[in-house]
Amino acid sequence: MPHTGDVLHLTRAASVQFLRPIFVRVIRVLDWPTYDGWLWIDGYELAANGDAVARRTLFVMPAGLIWPDRPATAARRPTTRTPVKRGSVRVG
Image (cartoon, rainbow, N blue to C red; front, top):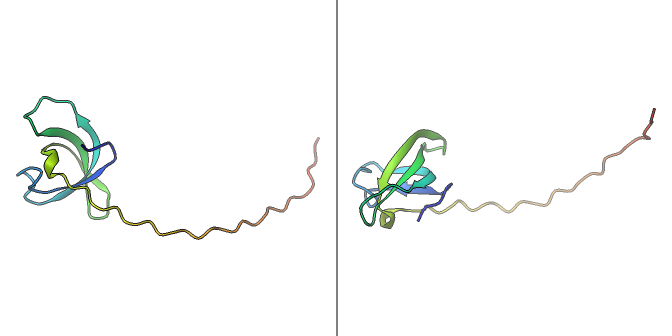
């Protein structure tokens, strides 16, 4: 079951409407009546660069949803911190 923030790859396996597969970021799963094995989701269609280009309400089969692999985050080197030099503090 998708959750808010999930990115999904929607193909014909999710619904025949996706002749051209799309990527969608889920806003929410709607609690609308539907056929058994189907659900409604609100989401943003994503461009190739990950920007949202359209808000869509989609009718999909959960069995056909694809969660793409998230890109591995590169290990960050620890940053060395330089202490801040302070002068004397004057009050008054």
